[in-house]
Image 1: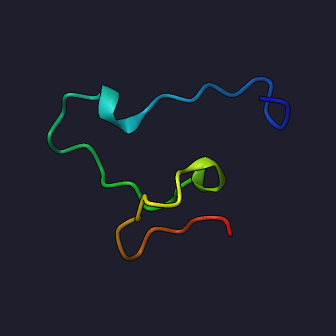
Image 2: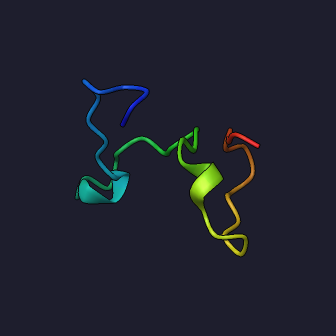
Length: 46
């Protein structure tokens, strides 16, 4: 990632812990398909 070359992205689905905190922000929303709908309350870029 050009914006954060030292950053590492790990999908939340990679964690098997059922008590893992629910996501509150969508970082890659600008790249999602038009048919994908995020749950209410999720912050996402326009």
